[in-house]
Image (tube, rainbow, N blue to C red; front, side):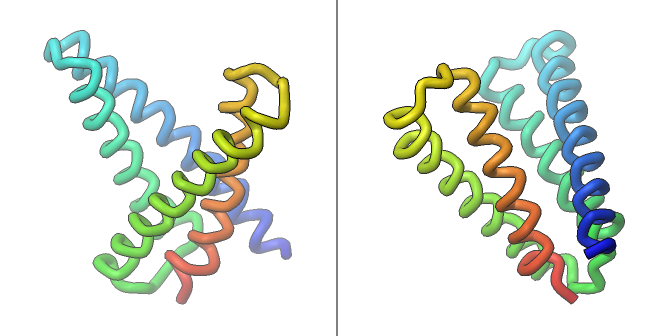
Length: 127
């Protein structure tokens, strides 16, 4: 239990760094290179996801699993978690709760974060 709490804290730190990296890369792409919103967003998110994969593999979960297999599992987990949070947003939060659109998004993000942590711990970066 203590190890899981420690990993959850590290996962949160990595998540904050992903957000900062994504935002900075998007800003650089748009403001310095004049790229479109879409191109900037894609490049920013790729940078954030790469940061997440590397730091979570090496630091958060200290996984000895191979890089290629871990990367494939990481991508699959990302896709599954994204679809689950989108479904939660569209089919649960929006029709059944009146927190407001932005707050529903934040709740869905928290849902994503929890299931992503669990799936990465139990599947992506398992020993």
